[in-house]
Image (tube, rainbow, N blue to C red):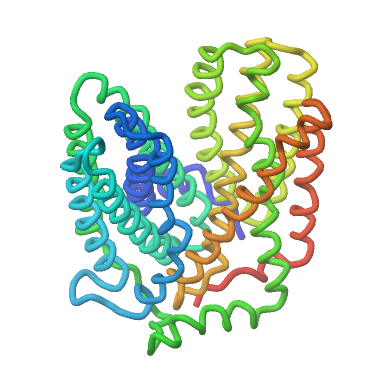
Length: 413
């Protein structure tokens, strides 16, 4: 692939496709924490029992199980806007209504009504994610998937920041009901974008039946050469990063950083470092492609994880923390962007919604299961050797890249 010129890169960055990816990312990220941290704060303020607050996290199951109804969105086309945008508009409108319904519940007196409303928020939010992921894959040319994914990921993070940070700050000054109504209105840019942006071309066609929509995505995927190796790569590429991230907060506190230092450096400064990493990664992928980026960014991720061992040796130095966080979040942002772009690139456009929903569900498995024993490992090894271990664990996943060639995963039809 010929590397684009600086002018061509700028034209891509400011194109309609990238603006749409950014706004759709924002629309995806906004609802996520409305049923987690923000809702937990509201319930705590209303005196709801901690056991009930803990159980409320179960309303997030649609995010994990979204592949169950993704085939319906692949199979059927609504009579307006097209296969992707029609379903997206329906999901967004019902998502706004669900957030409004949640705003008018009373956590102190009606916790089960709160759970009912929150469930519909997560269901329609997950449905929105399915259609946005499919739309992004079909709207972006293969060579722009990396940059488009970086815009999407950054929009997603801004949406999460607005909902969690912005929502909690507003809740100190206005009632939570008003906060949720404002958040429902913040979905409007996504709705307007859905109405105005064009439906992507669909030369691959659509499944002819529900049976085809459910089974053919799996049959098509596993008929490919190296299918198992690619799936293993999806599972293990970010496993070292996930294991290290699970223990960073206890680590910071244990070696002597204050909560203010953690909040200022890790959360605020780190947020912008991640945003920068995603953008840099997206631009680099225009130049070197997804496959090469996975190698480069994967090595950087592993090295940045090992830098936490150096911080453990140095101790509570704010300068040291800032340097490590800058490097780690930059490389993590780059790695995540390449990872998301890769997953989009291996989907078949006939079954984009179903295949991407399955892959995005799979990518969460290492975060849950590999992170579970990290406290035990840290306790037994000590912080320095724990982070070195996490860095080493990252390399077997990267080695799986050797099992398939740069073109093996591309499925354009």
